[in-house]
Image (cartoon, rainbow, N blue to C red; front, side, top):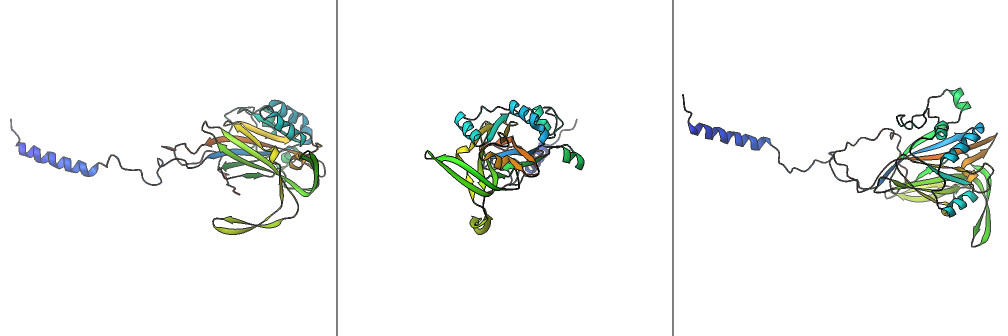
Length: 305
């Protein structure tokens, strides 16, 4: 048996230690900029689907079925009465797609969760002319954002309104009146979101107004607006839940028909449906999460006032 010189093993061990120190990275190296583990979400983010649904004249019974399926008791009684007096109707649906709403959205599913949300059935031009259609938009709302939803693009030539102010009856006739629903949202820590809707009536002739954006003065031709602050809706939604908004009847007195009803060659009535996709509060972390957008959010276009 041959015995190896101990000096040889000492030299070999020193070489290995030197190489290992140069190869292994430091244990506490900070993450690089832009990595998936950096930082926290700096602001609330609420993602919603907004549907504008056109109703066909023969779907009166289907519309009544929808109002039977929704919960209209979620709003405070006083607010419900004021909304009803102005021709508005609001209700909440659970996360399961109801049969009536599925038909109105032209989704060939009866509450099945395996059907991709927001994917409308393909229809021919002839079918689209016979059947009601829905327009879908996905919005990613930050705290300072408002989605301005115009259920109709056409204005009413005249629209007269009456209201009580300081126990006195006030009235005004608005020309070229167009209803706009201002939608905003705030994320809650439990994953729900508070959805806010303020009805506003745009009217008259456009006026040139100045506003400051990124330290620049921009001229915008905007029409005057009458805001119905007393009819503001604030509703908590869980992911998947729906808020449905429409008019009481097509001939109801009040502001509601300026938002949801038109009479041209015939009666045309529409609904607004908002579904909460997800809510991310500012305190939520994004550790080990990829920075890719969720399925169905490709159409997100932020709108800020």
